[in-house]
Structures are given as structure tokens and as C-alpha cells.
Image (cartoon, rainbow, N blue to C red; front, side):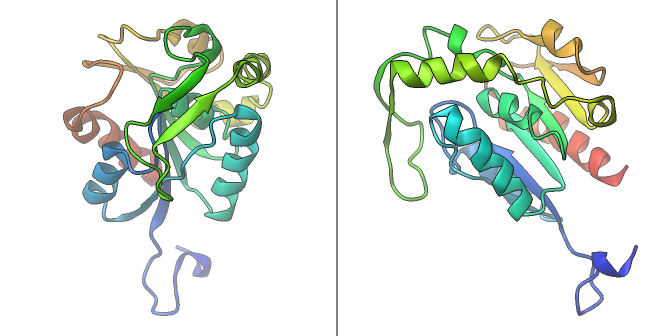
Length: 205
């Protein structure tokens, strides 16, 4: 361990894990709370992701850089964004690579969040412009994938996911893919038995 990895008390600094939540959720999701509780050896943090991808993508890149992320974990929509954080180790769980195609999910209107944001916002609004922005982003979401950073990305896909299934497309760009027993939305058992062990292994490599 080099000197940069030690603080003034000669104690190793914690690795930083950034968790990216799914659509309609927030940084206060149970997943982020559970990860922070069960991974005390890491500094687990989570941002509230802007609704519009034109704002969200640069925001997340700046957020990961500002917090010196060691690992980015994302689920569903957050998995799609995590995949695009190409400068970092990343775990993508059931990544919703084409939000614009989920017409029963991404639709025009104002909706209630699963949890409020840190600043107390309980609702979000989707416009036709935002849906178009998702379409435009999806056309370029693999642009940053290179041979060098391909090996830093892992995909985890639930065998019971009935909402999205982009495993085949993900496999066209990444080779590190694992299946697990579960549904689209993760529960604590999946986090405990699948995602956290994988995260720890990746951070040690």
C-alpha cells in the first residue's frame, strides 16, 4: 500500500462505492441504505439522479470524479448509467439499457417517487422532450466503451426479470456476465449473497 492510500494516522482509507438508483427512486432507497450498513469497510454514497438524461449523465460523471469513486454499482436505470461510468470499476444489475422503449414505465406525466429525495422532493415529471433525450442518449451509450475499460464492467442478470432483458446486447460489449436467482428489483438476500460478495472481490483485485 502506497502513502496515498494512508491517511495522517497511517490508517488505510476506505474505498468509495457509489450506488446509482433505479427509475422513480432516490438516494434514500433501501438498496443504498443496506449497502452502507453491510459494507462498513467502504464509504457507500448515493446521489439523487436528475430525471433528464441530458442532465443526469454529466452530473453523474462529475459526481463520481468529485468523490473519487472506486466502484460504481447501479440497478435498472442506474445500471444503464453505471455502465457509462467507463473510468471506474462498475457493476450493472439488470441494466435498463433502453428506457425509451419501456412505454409502460417511461411516460409523460407527473409521478410519485418510491422515496423522497434528500431535499424532500416526492414527485417527478416526465415530458416528451425527456423521452426524446433518452432515445438520443441510448444511441451513443456504448461510445465510451473501449478494450481497456471493457474488463472493468460486470453485468448481473436476474433469471426472473420480467421487466427488462438486455443481457444479449450487454454481452455484445462485455464478457463478465453472471446470472442470479431473483426479479428485476433486488431484495436484501440478493444484495447479501450476490452483489456484496462480488463488490468485495472486485475491490480486492
